[in-house]
Length: 302
Length: 213
Image 1 (cartoon, helix red, strand yellow):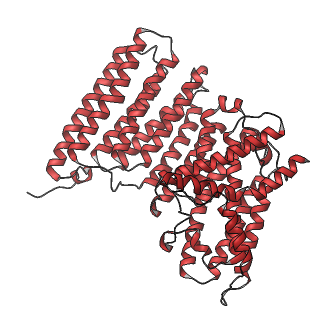
Image 2 (cartoon, rainbow over the protein chains, first blue to last red):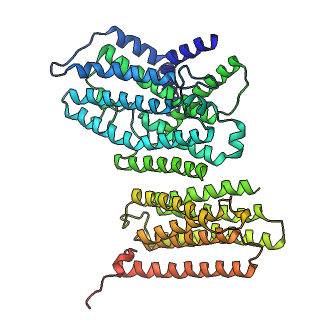
Image 3 (cartoon, rainbow over the protein chains, first blue to last red):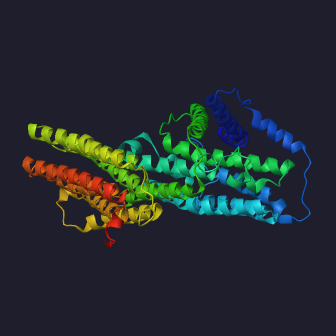
């Protein structure tokens, strides 16, 4: 009971903190002092107090976009085990629903972008969908490989399965999977080698350009949804690479939270030491990630 | 020890993909050097320690990891090229082809009549996959230096297959193969320099066209 409460609270409260840690890490690398770690929370609070402006050319699709996106991401978040704690919703085959809830969220984000009729936003939508096509096989190869290893079709079992024993016996496969999943995480969350979340130059943007017309609470929902998505995929990644289990719920929560913060620092380091890739090079890296995960599957299925 | 060798072979196959995907020659040369060193370590993990084994390991690491990459690097510097610009088939399709060939190598290795103790190991599929990667690089790249790298990868594939037979294969055969390789690289270095001087580029596809004098 206590564990479920912690689970829900963590799921709802922690996501913006990751963004804060990432930004702080980047600031430290650049030699700046940087915004406070809690800045994303202040931003969300400020946006929720503002009024909204809706263009007269938009329809209900534009208003539905942020709402459906946030709802789908929240539902997907409930299916993910955090650390060694089981997911809140779990049934055989939920990995498909999980993957396609993100698909639904993306469909509504891009539809809302197209609904504005702005040429920039249409361009962003086209890019987003193109790259999503390339990330999806990676995600599925990772999920299928884990399903095959753990002999289960439920995310809850698949992602609590990796243990020290598994890492020792099939370390190469786990290493391939975690690398592929990390690349997928960066691409899905529009982090640096793929997209710069801070850029305001429309020609190079992917995700940010799609949400230019949203304002006020709707924009807050988009920001929070993006943070939640980072949290969810990050939780999958930490489950994969963290084989330690104490068996005691409270220390396990502590380990999980520390691991997530380390993940945020890792993303910050990646963003600081790498430059954004040219747009033509992005598919190359995504295909490479797909090959990594397909190769892992080949080693398991053989 | 043999499972650790299997993990190293996974690394070898990953390096194959790196070489298929990169356009920078210096990076590809470094990758092939790492592959050579990894391959040099593997025989030490498989067999009982002996003077014969030590000689093979040392000479392989020296030849594949140091001497040959250094010679290719030298050729690259002299010809002043840094990247393969326009391969016959682009990088992403070759990467995908490489993945398909690797998968086929696994399927093919399952059907070979192997000794039962070799059946579960990665050696045969890794060997075939590396061979096919070498073929791919040889056939899809234009620059003579990339083709030399492809030739090296091809030889690495043959070497992995030979690893299963290290006990049966006398040292002289290994040494002979390495010597052949060294001479081959040496000759290629000279050829590259000549192509470069003649056409001021090392694009081998220009050798196909006839010129009127």
